[in-house]
Length: 419
Image (tube, rainbow, N blue to C red):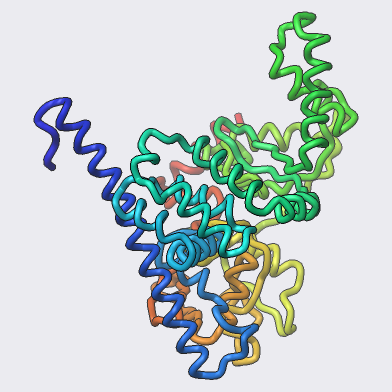
């Protein structure tokens, strides 16, 4: 591998490589726009109804770029904007003057404007390449917003009135067994919530060992749940772990549905916390059997058209995430890999745990899911309209580890653990 002969050359190569990344992004934009045009022409020639045109294309782009369908949709919209409405931004990206992220900022901040306004902002900001030197992400964003407010103040006001409908709260895993709780709120409400938390923290910080940020976080929990952070919060969680991890015979990770993998020690603490002082518990155990060789769960089948609840729960535990490659989104729907209308059985083998986007995409013309069992492993080949083939295999069952000990060794460990 070639490296710089000295520090100055290494720095120059870093800059060059960043410019090459930008140029590659511009090439992907052009290729994506070309695919979009070719698909549109083909569907028009086949008289596909307008409401059905482009169906599944974003998911196909995502598979080609090895990303989720949501990211694929962003890539498709990004390509359409740059290729057809923002030539100066695309040229700056091609020459490495503009980074991919800054180009995305420009597309994002002009997405709600009419084409003429977007083209004008494109010219004002990226028409002069020298003006982009040294400009930060924040400066690009501020420039785009300022021009948008000037060119279409009515559109900005209309966007603000509609944005409130998109308010929501989300939670996602964070490092070190923490969670990132986020709320998208209208500006005034969001500032009011933050100000109230800050005001309370200002009044109590210093009275105990907590710092300002910790007081704000604890106050948020207390005001939302109505309980002190020192009290256990009575919530229902779906915890999946092997019986060996439950009994402390090994430390294979468990799965907390809605969060992700957690250490076995933490899982055992959650189980222990569910037991009351009287020895009562609301926890339940469900036994699922896995094949020792690869950890694949055994099959279940139903004669019904829809998947019954027990089979749905089984499939969610088996697939864990959307089965389409590169996606990783939580399972939102359980559907037939081979459609029921084409005699696809309602069985675990033919079941497909997917996100909403991929479940809709696979109904588009040209998409096909080929389900096979190879050496005892259930394999899905996702075939797109361009005949690209993407293979997916299920993850091993939670807590599965290949047999590494003899039966005698395992029994001795069990006896020692019980003594």
